[in-house]
Amino acid sequence: MRFSLTAFPIIQAPMAGGATTPELVAAVSNAGGLGSLAGVLLPPNRLREEIRAIRTRTARPFNVNLFVLKPVQATSEELRAAMERLQPIRAELGLPQATVPSKFSEDFAAQLEVLIEEKPPVVSFHLDLVPAQTVERLHEAGCQVIGTATNVAEAVAWEQAGADYICAQGAEAGGHRGTFLGPVEQSLTGTMALVPQVADAVRVPVIAAGGIMDGRGIAAALLLGAVAVQMGTAFLTCPESGIHPLYKQALLQAQGDPTVLTRTFSGQHARGLRNAFIERMQPYEAQVPPYPIQNALTSEIRQAAAKAGRLHFMSLWAGQAVALSRALPAAQLVETLMQETHAALRQAQRNHAYE
Image (tube, rainbow, N blue to C red):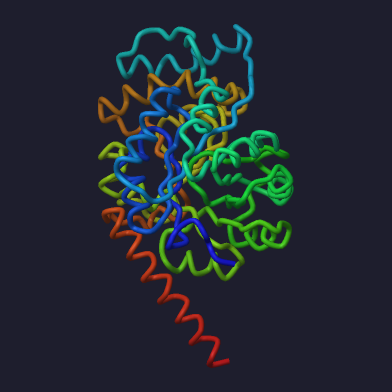
């Protein structure tokens, strides 16, 4: 089974917080991969603008991703306690006493309507399942749908909802876990173990995500039954990426596996580089309000830290293979990845021939 969306089986992962600029998305798509825009933090009007900005830069397919957000609540006491825990860090950054945000997230329903109106070629979802009726509306608009799964049950659920592709997110992946069936702690299967299980369980094509940074990883995923890979950390260090220069530097200097799963920044388990914020908030991990409440409460901290260049208070999402990061323009990275993939597959054939 071949990946039918693009020339190459490479998807640049949607990464929120400014990483997936229209320039990055378009560069990847123009190079033969599938660029992806992270839409979760964008108000509907801004989401529309970003989609149109991508269209001015590429005529190739691209993807727009949303988090499936359902209503969550916190009591006034829970909010007060959460803000008090963050106050010492706010003080260090020169921020005033926190107040409850006017909103905790953008309106998912309104964002979804923008996608149906703008009709991007591909739409992907994270954190939860959308109803089959929503998938059908997107199909009627001409969009193909990718659903994220961190276990086999989620993959089957997405197939039943009508998804065209399943993105199997292994435990190695950077950023937010997409788990929606069962606890996150029981959905941390590695990519090499997850992909073949999902490929055997569903009839729709599978995309591998998590810990893939070069052609060796792409080749391995293809041999395991995936038709394509989704790569996030690998594209963060491209010049077209919109992340902070110090964040890029930290990724390029990483050695071994300096990552950790944490809820402390957003209220949802996410993998990133361990830093002072995570360490100081770790004792309160279980008390953190759920996403998107905690994410909204830490928003000013992350923005102020970025403005001041205080890396230890920024969310530095990264996958477990971050030490393989390299600084290449997006188009060159796609080309290099495909050359490496072909070389790895040829080597695998040669190795098999000697048996």
